[in-house]
Image (cartoon, rainbow, N blue to C red; front, side):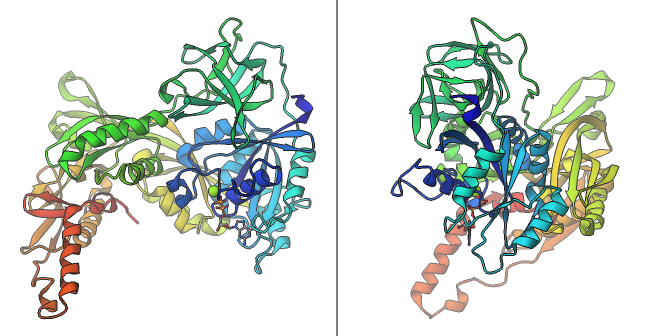
Length: 593
Ligand code: GDP
Ligand code: MG
């Protein structure tokens, strides 16, 4: 394809503003699928994604419009996947910014808009849902100009739902987004944008060719990984898979090369011709590392093999999580897994539960601590709070810190500063960009992994956006806090906390657990302790009567239902000594909200 006839773009939107619906319409209007084939929201192909409204794996569709080839690149929308977003954006020259005509600008994806600007994208504002009675396009245009600082005078007005303005969007893409540049005859340089495992094709790799040409039968080399492979398929999605002979500079498409695991295909790697390699890789490659770890254990010990199998299958398709076997005194055999962030953790946990039908216990998420032992006894990388050495064996303990950049409307600045301060943040900078505060904080990652993002969103009603990078390890006054239920320590609930926060955190945990653990026939004390010292305590009162007592003599089916429900509840419980703890309690107790 001639370069001047190519347009590569992505869609940026706050959740629910209509990104998927608009993408469907663009595919439909350009004839990619017939009405009958048009299943709802073809781009989000996993159930969980659809429910959460998050696109996890980037997917790309090739559209034909008035003699031009348009590549629509779908991007993940959450900070856990920030690097993947960045790679997808680097593969495009422009973006559609979709804003709900009734809701206006909501800055949850603002970080993406700024990233898009950083990648020198031409941004086309699209005001969607103009069919709604509450639509106010003038107000939304003003917001786009005031808050984001983009000219909105030529924004395209659409109703993705009723199919209004779709051709105007396609025309705007062709007219306003610049074509890519690149030389088809130069040595090959293609960016590995994404990869996933397909049961029929093996690993499918999404690429953006920057220079040169990628062909079927070519011997290619991954410049970071240093491996070579033979290309056996080249193609694109329309959205149906279509094979092509080659992909030239400026084009986006996929290849397969008889690769078995996505772990061999690092996002951001540069693909070159093994026989005629480029001398320099593309800029910006970053090794993706797990930053949050937790234990995953089957509720039923007999499910261990099934869990091993299921985790292995998920891993085939997601190289960004890691796992190794772990044993716990209380929970038996399971796995210690590493994730990009808490959302990533929740997605994997949910997929295991849903797609593989496993009942799981998740232990407290933790970052990796660096410990120096006393008397020069060595260095420990602690992934699991339960393995913390005795306090007298620890010389120093260091934790990872991040630099966080938060964009927030002025009126929410106060509560945000307080939140960061409460989380041991150190303010670095405060400036205003397009009528919006930009605050930079250094924060311990440990304080961010649990619920920082949720808190940020709820404090600002979704108007804040957040982005972070790791900045290394710093020593801290950190201690291990144990939680004792009925006088027995529950290792799955132990956590590393800063000494200054131990008491507040301990009290909070005890209060939460008091509500989360059902009553028993006896009193159940719940304690938080550091070493042998109890720092917080609650007691669950004893149960007085049988739950079925009030049905006595009454409707028998109602009574049976109640008993069944109890049994159902039992199944999801974990026994500690003679106390049952519902599995939800393990993660719920950690939310500090
Ligand atoms: P996404 O989260 O940005 O991908 O948003 P979706 O495309 O999933 O849309 C979110 C909701 O808004 C869905 O219920 C859509 O049916 C609805 N929606 C999308 N576009 C329009 C529109 O133009 N008008 C109206 N009234 N609803 C829309
Ligand atoms: Mg969507």
